Length: 299
Ligand SMILES: [Zn+2]
Image 1: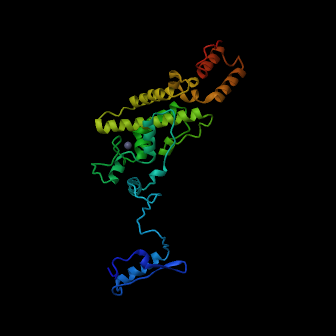
Image 2: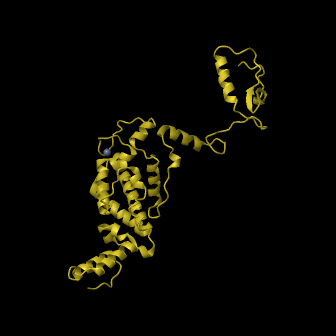
């Protein structure tokens, strides 16, 4: 308001002196009171400014290109509201799961699923932020997928089913990052990871069915669906030589996917056992269990 020439350019008012910039002001009248403080702050800011020969322009610092994009603004708003740098969190695809399972996994990692606490943060008016399954705790992403007593029961079963008694699923990271216990081969790690993603997908699906369609939460049918669906998706995506047997998948999927090294170890152990301690029929049962696709075993 105090500028004497309303058509002045920025370059007219900033001069470069001894490697720093200073104001070259031309006021209609000397600044007084609060304006003096503001001028001091302005001089501090422009001291580090270096001008180029280009015409005056605006630059958006949200995007590396310097141009404004609605995506970068949406990202900034998300980060401010959710308090996480959502764009930095991602997970690679798992070839044994369909895309919709991977999308859900990514959204869970980024805390982007519409649990009640996240809807509340976005200003959506809800009757309650309590978990719709247990109605005891605030429904956060971690609670909905792994911590709720109703979902923890499902995870407990799945860990037992996969012979993972020393593993615990107590956070989203546990559910979505590859379990280091399965280091024997990629097939074992990938199928275990795929199963955990499918468990999360099925839990979230049934949570929504309960909220929006008033469908009963039935652990038995959810577990059956997880076993059938994971078998269907994973076996269809296996290469021919890695075919999965339904019975073995249901009984002990971890032993099935532990790979040739593990099965070779079992074979050597069985062959070295004393025949008097280990009956031939029992040996045969073990061999059939670990090598289900071989029909040439005989006592
Ligand atoms: Zn709950």
